[in-house]
Length: 257
Image (cartoon, rainbow, N blue to C red; front, side):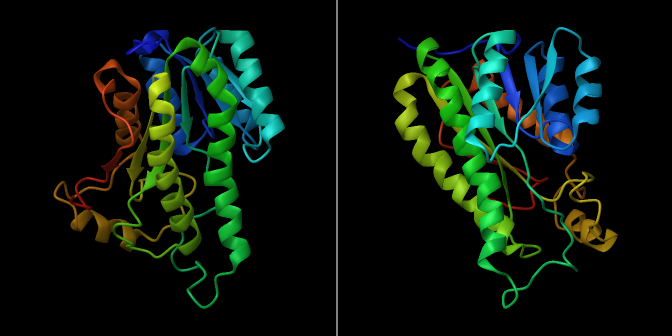
């Protein structure tokens, strides 16, 4: 038996990489709607604990390297013991990457090891989180999985080969997992942003790149982390109960269609 919809204020949400940048914006957005949120972190302990302290009883910071299945199992178990069964997973964590087009390895310089590092974070990390949370979601007949993607494989303003390939693979996983998990009341969707102004990862981006992207959008603005975070609420909310396997692009209209 499945639960078709669950109000946001009844959800238990795990945000991977939830302490800084886009992850922090997503964390705060769900907290603002009354959800109980676990802020997963790996190196950002101070930021995670400070954010959790702002929402006593509603937020909890838990360390886990998403590439380590044992650590992710512990993350989900601890969350369940503290808040109850996990209903919602936001696969946001970004492993060892900085958006600096001037410093990126170009096509004849990129190594397969660089691609592997990004696959470990984007694909293996998401796989670990989904599989660890799945038993609880299956048991309750409700689950919301939201993967964070990118618009770069539709519009490679800057060709970050490793990051883009990993996120493209995550989109494929989003669509195929949606098919397998749908009968259990679990939806799997993706929210894809472009360059965000500003996160730790995009802080190294030259101002000219921000200006060029803004000029190419109908809104004439670069998307903010808060704007992208707002869109993740839709896929978790009751209004998206009939939506799965989709990729919503949130970039001010830079990518069309």
